[in-house]
Image (tube, rainbow, N blue to C red; front, side):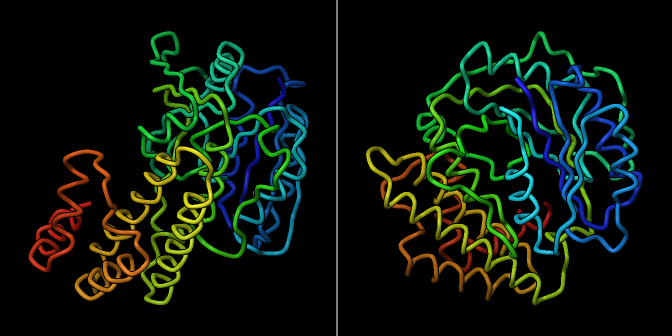
Length: 324
């Protein structure tokens, strides 16, 4: 099976981008079994020379387009991809050496449509080690029907923790939201929902770089409002999908419920947490998105939903969330 690694980049340092590309060439795959597609979201300094310096060791294709945020860059990568299997990698992150080969074996062994693996957070200056640094033979693997998986697990909204068959995009169009933030929540939800078999592994394959200057960490008030607006928009789309889905939609409802909780948890961390959280609780109630009716997931979730609906409870939750 050929893999398409889709890398998105925007104003990254040369060291970060090189680290990412180097990691993709150390996945224990023959050169003909993968391609690297790099989509630049109109960086101030064109990274094409960096990308093309890897053309002697891998099939690398480079595309530069007008700045429309990460969703548009990922969509371009999907349109260009030729592989049977897709994996997204943000340009400031990287893959641990040799892990892709193991994930491909899970596709073969279990006829998987989606394989979800684990990630570790690393520093922005972490060094990629070009050798296998994980023990793959002892990793835990579980197999699910996709709807069963979503009904029993909180589906992580990042597209970078999973690999999937390109064929899942056939039929009804499926794209990332463009010109916005939180662009992959709806995409990942719809993708996994339309899959048949989901395989999970606790193998750590992805190195996520914590970047304080990223768009989700900026502290400008307008930017914070824009981020929450994007979160509400993603929640609305997932909720709409849950209402429109035929048959058992427990998994989609679970995803919507946890997106609502996530909005409130993040609101509790803001300087204006009192007014913001109270306002969001009211908004979610008006839209019948919170608290969920007849839904019980775990003690932590139930405790949060009970506390966040009162001023005193929000004071307690604020103390907890402020430490995160």
